Amino acid sequence: MPEAGPHPDRLFPSDPLQRRLARELYGHVRDLPLICPHGHVDPALMAHNKPFGNPAELLVVPDHYVLRMLYSRGVALEDLGVPSRDGAPVEGDPRAIWRRLAEHWHLFRGTPSRLWLEQELHEVFGVTTRLSAATADEVYDQLEDCLGRDAFLPRALFDRFNIEFLATTESPLDSLEHHRAIRDSDWAGNVVTTFRPDDVVDMERHDWASAVGRLGEVTGCDTATYGGYLDALRSRRAFFASNGATATDHGHPTAATLDLDGADAARLFEAGLRGRADAAAAERFRAHMLTEFARMSCEDGLVMQLHPGSLRDHNPRVLARFGPDMGADIPMPTDYVRALRPLLNRFGNEPRLTLVVFTLDESAYARELAPLAGHYPAMVLGPAWWFHDSPEGMRRFRELTTETAGFYNTVGFNDDTRAFPSIAARHDVARRVDCAFLARLVAEHRLPLEEAAETAVDLAYRLPKRTYRIGDGTVA
Image (tube, rainbow, N blue to C red):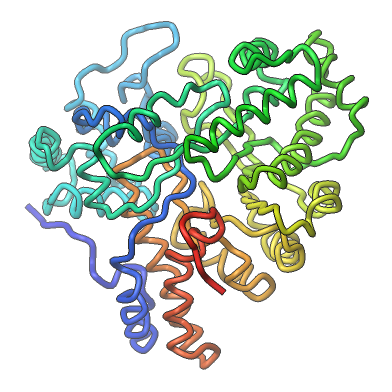
């Protein structure tokens, strides 16, 4: 059977001089610890430290990148073992699910999913056989054997990946019991939470009013009033910070912000609780709350992240049958210049605020986001995200933002993943792409080699630590 293994020069330039420089720069960052300041790994993995499930359950069923590609070419989600909302039967044989991935492996040629998965298979599980329909069972057996060993338990992999810091993401209603269990254990892994209040902010969610009620129950605040609601949010932010949180995260449909007076905000809030808020009112409330959260970040020091621009669950049939996060989210054009102006007018010059802005709209990089981050002290750019978390997307990000925002108005890399075994591969891809970009600058005599090496280390390690206030995070 043909052997597989990632090439040592993958993602480096084809030009011999630039390739040599990229190798040298990569040598400075290859073994640095991983800083993972934003992601969606389930903290229960680290709290319980139980073996992962079978290969299909680990690498296929929960991966919306894999699901969306297979679904787009006619593979039914039922045949991939995705649970249906109505409890109808779906494929229950993990080996059959794995075979379906292997049979359609050609669909992933040139995609970041293949890049990550091949690196995981080789470097995490020691697989040297190239995946195909003919080798599916052989690879499955090797994965299954690995997953039964202590060396492949979540904490063991965390340590092997050399993760120095891992942030998860939880609702304000979460008890954070898993984080407390990690903290109270004898394991030294640094896993913290991130405050994501979307379910108590977005009035268009069907359960928003009940979530606001539960927020009141959890905090003892009167969330039937706008003032009590704000008190409850401050209380939960403090609770999250006491459990290690350094950041908040906000996944809004748009980047719209508003700075309403208290009476106007209270009227919107009360209309929402009574079920009288339409889509426009919900957008105004979300927009105002982003500015309100910026105010709270100035008070408590939590870094504020904004992830806008996705039309969630575009496919109503998939949503109805399987629920959200099944690969049907689609990027939308997003305005930042006008949208962020109310928030930035109020807090953009505030040294106590760090606002990390992401985008799914690449057309905004050079026109809007880099100029904004290149001016406002409070704003920095998150890395190429989601659909653009790919070699080409990362290259475009550097090409379109560096000339205006430089490197030091960006935050380095974060993996934003639910797929824990892919974390090391994702960071390695980012480090290689950045080293390739820096190698070009050196080859073109635009940057001295020693400064490129320092910048590579900053992007991979020191910048995320500084931005998210992890340790000393010292960087210029």
